[in-house]
Image (cartoon, helix red, strand yellow):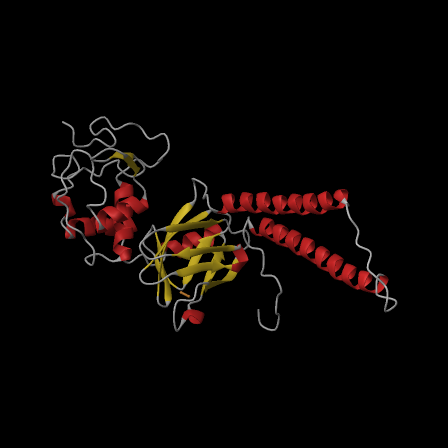
Length: 329
Ligand code: CUA
């Protein structure tokens, strides 16, 4: 940065050039019509100016062709903008299956980041170059927004639910992270840095100082400490469903209906256990609202994930506990 004041931020992710092409297209269309309209105003004002006091204006009728033309052309142009934007939006909202998961918790006024391996960072995020990274994000207080201009990624971080975004960095370096949603006094200072590292440097960084164990290990510990294990027994003999193989499965609910067991569902089940009762079980679980932090919930989620076979797709059917019906015996 320094003395340079860039008009456009650097392009440092796979999607950045696509976003810039669309932005450039919008800019060109807007500039073209601005010039055309203002040019026409000045030209017509001079060409058709009133030349004498008694001159009556000539009012033209008809001109159907012109009417159709200036309806169809803008319609076509806006449809191009819409479909192009929708395509990009669709790409940006669907992380690839092999993306590396990282968790983000926003709070007034900092970004807390947790890697699966257990590394924690504040206002910094280290990622390897060329690897797709999926962020699962939530907030402890108000709405924040995770904005990395160089990646052309911006996603709201909302209390009470998970939002996701993803990117594939293409260039090693240090990039700005901003909060892009006004969140109180120090909103403007809720900034940080993304460090994109060569894969080998990233491995070195990862191996340095994992004091507290992986996210899943911490989750397992929390699972014991909160006495979850007393009811959620792995072999399904407890009073609550076994959590083995639950993540990614379709859970059948009491009173009909099903739910996909994703991060949001597990979070809800911890904080509002009565919201969705698994078929075959009673509403006996107490809420853990206030007993477990957002980071603790993320650790629990990673623990529950670790109880499922790794490839979530084409997972083998568990013979002892049919998905969604763990209670039937
Ligand atoms: Cu957080 Cu603005």
